[in-house]
Length: 368
Ligand code: MRU
Image (cartoon, rainbow, N blue to C red; front, side):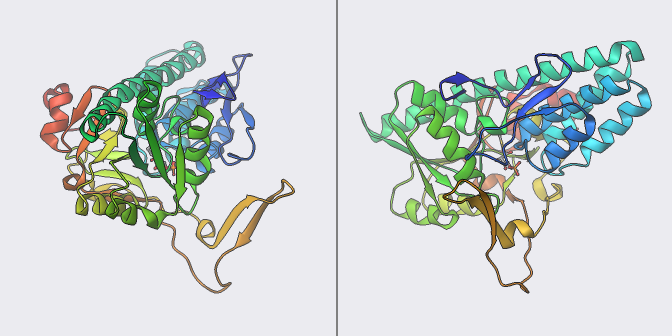
């Protein structure tokens, strides 16, 4: 996507080909800072501290983290240790495990002399595949937006509600939930996005609003609790969110609060779609009950950070000193509340049969 008119991805190989560069998402929307990662430890920290975040981007960053580890020490033991270190960074997004499995499978069979170069090639392929997948999700999802627009009437504006950031910043490029938005917008369909602020880390207010603005997409940031009211008032035509892990039955884990939006959407007959690349499907899970839900530092709830008028980042406390806080980062929306899953192969019902219809090879391979 474009930032100030310049095409950018969220992660790329440095010009010297021995470092990986990322956008530091903890500083957006106030500062566009590029960070060079040169070691496995830096990659681990970048994922854990959410300089890079979003399920597909976490996977791509982990793949590059393995390449950095192989550059330093291509032994089989270091490969195993690097996989373990990266796997421990964030628990919910299954793309992390998927990318690490892909890297391990590709590299374990090679000699030490071959590993580093092959690791960079494989990580680049994972990143490129993410871009291609998301572009296809955009096409399938844009067709849904176009159909909603035809139903609403010529020239009518389509209002889409999204939660968290499932845009290009959460992937290598295009995004998942926002890829259809960008495609439809570029095709000239009049649309507007309601952006949930997404407490506690405010990925909606900070990241989704920023990237939509860079692309010129009309949008309005709302507090997390506003969506239900807007749906009651007929101000939302459809919801589209991303997911960090989708079970084989179509249950979807996504940023905390997604479930409540799905409930409100069902009560108000608003279609609720979830966009996902196939590496987000965890075929080993029959349903969403076993999806690990990340809990994070309560300080993300008790404090809030922003930029003061003099351009300095400041953190302030919101809660009484002695109040405890709990910080659940994800929730699971049952498949029955999901109107459809938008994948790179098309749109399907959120069900085992729906997913297997699009990915029939999984039927032959078995669930896992
Ligand atoms: O905690 P985050 O910011 O990594 O959470 C991101 C989300 O929940 C996204 O909606 C999800 O990864 C789908 S993204 C393409």
